[in-house]
Every structure is written in C-alpha cells, then in structure tokens.
Length: 99
Image 1 (cartoon, one colour):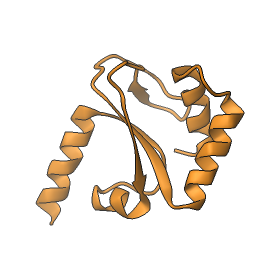
Image 2 (image 1 turned 90 degrees about the horizontal axis):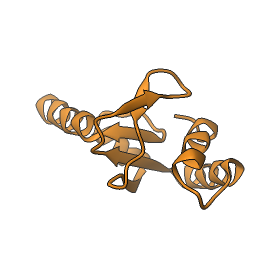
Image 3 (image 1 turned 90 degrees about the vertical axis):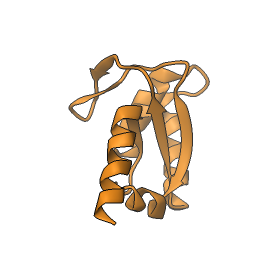
C-alpha cells in the first residue's frame, strides 16, 4: 500500500495526526526501508481505498514496523499493510511450506 493511501486510512483510525502528517511520517519510514504493519483480530471488514476490504479499526490492533527484508521473508512485497490475524497465520504457514 502506498504512503498516501495508508495515510488516509490511518487518519481515520487515530485522532492524533492529520492525513498529511501520517503521509509525511510514512514517507520518512520508507526512506529508511521501514514499513508499518497493522495486525487486527477484528473479523468485521470495511472497503479499502485501494480496493478490496480491510479489517475495521479495533482497540486490539497491533502496530509494528518491519523492514523490507522482514516483509520479503513473509512473502510480502515492500509496502504498508493492514492484515487480519487470519491472513498473517496463513501467510506464515505458506512461507514455512515454501522453505
């Protein structure tokens, strides 16, 4: 996901920063080969601005920073992600099978 699209989503998920501030922060992370990954337990889905569906914001969302190499190890191209825990578990199983 591009920083502009993720910034739009994050502005709706948090009250602290504006969309432009999120975009600037995400672009700075990208310069350092870091990407924001949000993992959610919420089974409810909402439309994503980039197409498809993403989990609805939840108090239990876990935010982490991952390097481009860590994402590749999990079978993901570089970028920012919002994943359901189900997707994360499935990707880890697929990655283990491929190794």
